[in-house]
Amino acid sequence: QKQSGIPPGPFAWPIVGNAFDMGGKYKGKRHRYFDDMQKIYGSIYSFYFGKQLYVVLNDADSIEEAFVKHKSVFSKRPVDAFWIVRESNKSGTGIIWSNDNEWEAKRGLAIQILGESNLEDTVRAETKVVLDALSQSNGKPLAGRELFLNSTVNIISRILLGSRFDGNDPDFLRIIDVVKTSFTSEGTFSMLNMFPKLRFLPFIASKLKIIFDKVGTVRNYLSGQISEHKKQHTKGKLNDLIDVYLSKKDQDDGMKLVSEGDLVSLMLEVFPAASVTTMISLNWALFYMILHSEIQQKCHEEIESVVGTNRMVNWSDRSNLPYTQATLLEIQRVASVTSISLPHTPTNDVVLSGFLIPKDCIVLANLYSCHFDEQTWDEPSVFKPERFLNDAGNPTKPPAFMPFSVGPRSCPGDSLAELELFVFFTNILQKFSLTGSGELSTDGNYAIFLSPPLFLIHAKSRQ
Ligand code: HEM
Image (cartoon, helix red, strand yellow):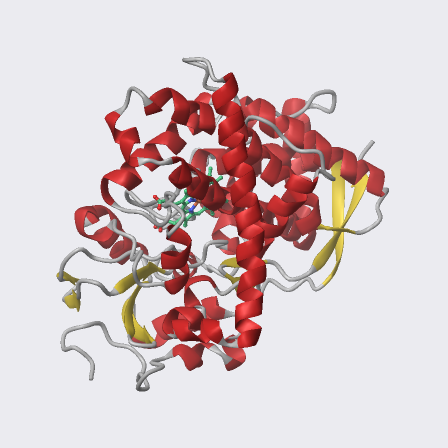
């Protein structure tokens, strides 16, 4: 029996709710399910996953209204709603799956280190590794995923742990393995969250054991890194996140809420949150340049006329590259890598656009539909960088552009992500012309993040 006043939505079956509606033609295309429901039920709709009520916000106005205007109500994560989260949180909580003062303290740590490190040098160093890989490929096909994963993991490793890894380092390979599970899993829509007892079925139990063992090994490695840092730590040394934590530990009352187990959990969350999202965005970026060779050429010409060919493109060149900037914004819009935000839950009953949003329901922002909303965007399915240029020819971001979501729970890594996208993208287009092969369809695959289909990059040096 649906509660009265809640947003409309599809008929929900007893016990399973709408869980099976997301299978069939929506398997691997869950963003399409969310988008189709929005076309039928409007900008705020609801559905049930098992017995859990979900409310989905589908346009910029409703997302702003909830996450910004009513931020004190909507900035909580439903940490107790998911078995997988409850299980992982036993060893310590990170940023994504914590609330209140603890969350604030950990988010503060992350924001501090993201502001302190010399990030551009780190990003440039990893960009050179990718440029070398492209040079050595001699036009032979490369998979984008493989091209960017090591580099994006190494960038965040430098920020969290203070160093990068050699590609064959066994600890690195174990981190990569754990990171990879985050774009092949069902995340919060796993059946395990609906029926936690499924974990006792032998084939699920053995799968879970493999995952938990892998995560446990990386957890031990990260704990070891904290111990190593403690041995060498000097006050005021702020080379990486662990240093910032150790420096603040004695001085800052907020840090009393953050144990070493919490710090490890934070790093375990941030490794995939930072690398997979950026790796997939870069993959989409090259995908769209392969699809639109005339736009690729226009970006290349702009880069060549501003920077030339004798030096790398820097972040400071950005303001002189408006068309390239607009192209990157358009890539982020159409890619909508985090097509659905992380879950939020209201702290009390609240009325939004006339609908009751009850305490303890789960609220999702459908950023994909927001980025393809016909009321906001002119011809949303057409790839058009110019839409991000104002009359004076400068890049501009309309309020409905929200790849990092909005409000207190929005992405704290947005500046780092933008830096990485810009530095990798521009330096690749400066030196290479790109063509592709394989599945060149814009209909992505959804597994927590929205990824491009399997395609191959052929990079030809321009020199
Ligand atoms: C293109 C790359 C990225 C995209 C598209 C992206 C997008 C997002 C989105 C949509 C959210 C959820 C916001 C919400 O629930 O309302 C989020 C959260 C988060 N992101 Fe990112 N992100 C990216 C890169 C990064 C990077 C580089 C980092 C780390 C340095 C990072 C760390 C996080 C964390 C820790 C959260 C959870 C915040 C919280 O719960 O307070 N992300 N991101």
